[in-house]
Image 1: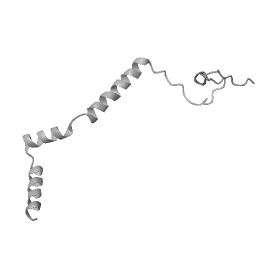
Image 2 (image 1 turned 45 degrees about the vertical axis):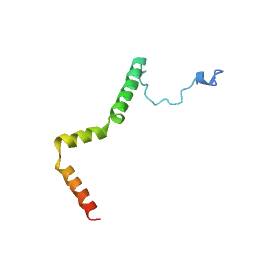
Image 3 (image 1 turned 135 degrees about the horizontal axis):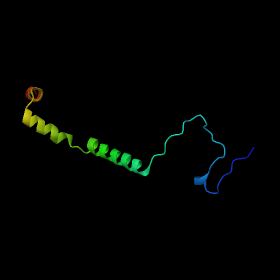
Image 4 (image 1 turned 90 degrees about the horizontal axis):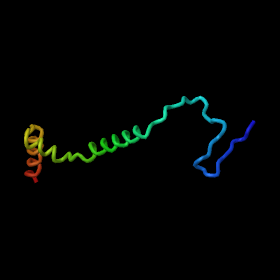
Length: 83
């Protein structure tokens, strides 16, 4: 039985005997797939966290004039008038 051989650098360490023999062998991801996944993550991050929500809500309220907003404003004025 041979003992594991280690390289001098910890980055290049390899064992002669695999530790996890029951795990399936997964396909290797290409550099192009890694770049596509990274670009997709950045795009999702930009779409979710950089979109200005408040101006869109203000534009919706100004254009559509929903009933719930009118009720909210009336309720605010009713509360401040009683003080």
